[in-house]
Image 1 (spheres, rainbow, N blue to C red):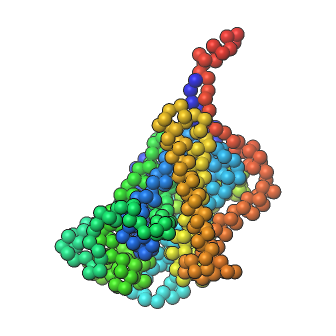
Image 2: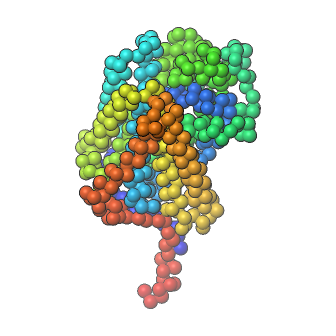
Image 3: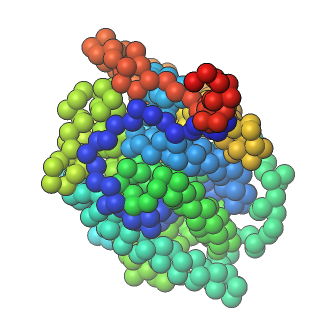
Length: 510
């Protein structure tokens, strides 16, 4: 007997195979995590919530996400489909779970684009020396930013991946130089006066003061580590086999972990967390732009301008790298008749889902302008909002791996561990975190946007928008039942198959 682990019944979607190289696939994952923009938007909030324990919180937080990365790797090998979460959830668990997982991924991509837009606005305000950002600047920059990222993404996978590769190399180079300069300043004794000297206690998990401290840091980590999987939605376009495509996500995750832990450590050792010091990571004027403040502190005004520009570059490449996979998930959903067929169209020249790409860009712009009118800190609120959506589709990915491989995985202890046991642990952890976070977001004082109907406004941004997928799913089920009946993407699990010799022995008359 042998194991049959390949998913069947998948459809080609008109995407161009080989248009994305293996190295470009890894850089798409790195670009989607966007270290410069992610650290700029999340380092201050992470330091506020977890203090000097932020490095170990990052390390602990990545453990369940690494287990999810293993799930992605195995599922991509079994089904290199552009629908990723949607396709795997549908095949392994059922159409409703798959549909909701796809919706969560689309929502997370849009909210991440909103956060990237706001960080770009903040960074350009520094470049143009705007202390009070007028409404016209918010809207104008948002329009140009979202239009240009969407336009370049719609040009084609090859062109988009090349642009992403160049931008990723640029931001990593600047981050490496900045981290090295911070380390030199620390060794020379020129750190901020209120910063504590480096201690290995920062890596001691038992020094974390409370579960809330860990949870706050975990949610920040969830936001900044998310994106390693972006390249896997390009699996139908990546040059090479499905196993190589699945490996790209794991490699991107490992590089990202090292980057964030090292940079968080040197940043804490240099700037500290004294909220009253104007150079601290947690000072109210620095919390949305940590990278810019660090660069200004060691280089001066010109360093701050360079950092602001590299953050813009990072946010730009990140937005491109999140639009690409989300557009392909929507393409897959339409191909299998889970959403309107109009989203299944692929441009004949570029061989990309142009209509879907532009629709996602327009949604991002509309939501940004809406949140800009109601939120005092779009960055903070969308980070927390994204965390719920990311938790949701990571849970679907982990459970899909468990459900799909459970019949064959236990033939070997290695596959049992990586295909079932570790993904199941990740799913349990993320479910607990998701519930606790949703509960916390009910508090009217949570986030920066006040309350709506006695509940935190950030609850509506993160949870209510996610749950909006349920009535949308019901409405589409009423209009077209084929997908939900399993006709377009039937349920399937990995299973054992008799070899030809075994078949002859069991059926000697044949």
